[in-house]
Image (tube, rainbow, N blue to C red; front, side, top):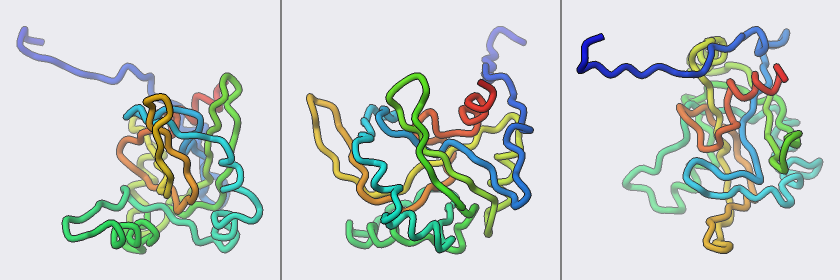
Length: 193
């Protein structure tokens, strides 16, 4: 290495992907979000009453029972021509040409070391971008993040921006999520401990 070269390399040890081996139907369980936690931008995701969104009478439960919860590759982007109403409509729509996975199940797991509540999903590659998701899941070097697509109320509490989710649409496969625990490497770390 010459004196003007700078080399960056991950300090994370490559993971054993065998811990995320798909089941007989091709699904893996992966951390996809968390509550009672701050995201990378310093926004606090409040977990009070979050269990109602996953409950028996929830919209999410109805959609999972109908097997119609799909992940898109990336979150929808607000186009310059969109107003808030048209963008909200886009957020509610999961586009078939953007599918990368099918979500069979979503559930909450309390973190054993804190008040954090982790969202886990069972997801299988599916649709136009299925190979992109499959490659990320199976790679021992590339991480794989999911991020919730939801509607929330935002308020300031003691100077902190707090989000209270009131509707979950889906979880999207994103390059880097805002919730640090919502990724493949942290899922495997959970499994190893």
